[in-house]
Image (tube, rainbow, N blue to C red; front, side, top):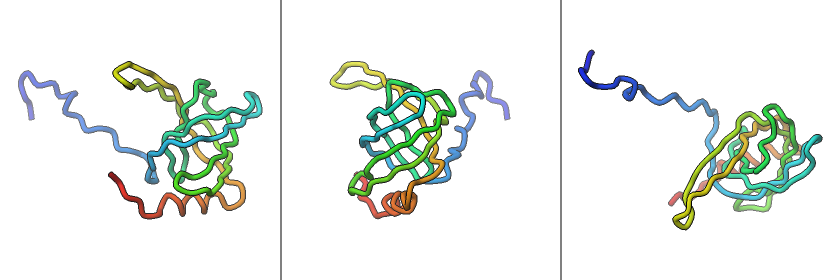
Length: 131
């Protein structure tokens, strides 16, 4: 159907989210270690059973493998996983009325040490109160 003067590009549906698992938005500290770049402390912004978004000033190259160690928010369950950088992110926001920016990486979990995957899934599926 034609709509004169109407830009059809703006009516296209958004691409479907390809994530297979639910993401939990929570800010928490992570330790990232890579063979070529050493070890650094960073901040995770969200997590799922398949990966996490990590805010870091150093956007490791795509494909970089790393070890990520963290404690699950709302518990003291320590998890260590081997992960791979899949995406780079840049985001702008406002804090106290001032514009700010940050960069980060999206990592996909490749494997967990010990029973880290069970601990992570258990923590992510617990009932949570959303406000």
